[in-house]
Image 1 (spheres, helix red, strand yellow):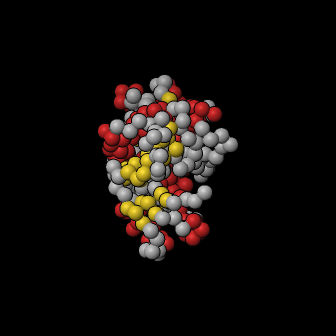
Image 2 (cartoon, one colour):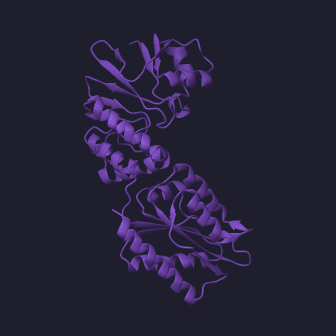
Image 3 (cartoon, one colour):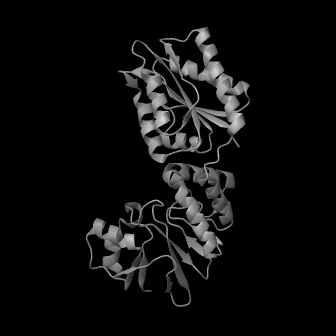
Length: 330
């Protein structure tokens, strides 16, 4: 059978890297894409001779017995992105939305544990789409307004939602509002365990207040896993030893990554140990402020190794943050 049309929902190379070879083999009548899709395809492949057909939101193309309708989804997460909706099948082909970076032998949402699937979807959202949350809200409203009846969602990454499409739509609505639970995340790295000892004392204080918390040593936790925990956390507590008048490289990496993803509606504080100059707490506090995370404490600095009095201060910081999390989390 002959393929007449190729639809490009998204130009990023994990979606379209083989397109030149496919175009040469198939020689389709039409290459359907968004306005920005055509521009980005030409920028990538330098082929203005392909048979482009540009579509906008609301445009439909007949496939004979069936039809496909398009919706532009600019900056979710590239400017060229769009959805394709198979009208008669009530199937939404959603490009980078509603997906997971998860390799499984299963193909459908009803073939695997739903809680684990939603957890993987949260990780994807936290690391790919979090900074576009206001646009996600607008997109969900547009989908509802369009009157699309969605029985199945087929993302370009991960499993297909054939039994629980509304579950992932509801999850995106919740994540895009960045609703925080009564939860704190302790993110730290340590040189000679002094900062780690402080982290455990802060955790003891959080535990005394009965709030959920995660302790994440950056030596052992990838930044993408850390961002997943940040997604629904109310408080971020950052800890680093001072190194060369700065912070540890793992923490610098984490802050750079987190800043780009723009988490909102959170509170934070900093802690750390030092030997002589002691800049880490000041730098961490400034980083929180730069990300518009509300700083609720001046932070705790400890020279070399914490004393029992220092650890009491750390526990008190944990209790203080725990109380605030209980008052402000959902």
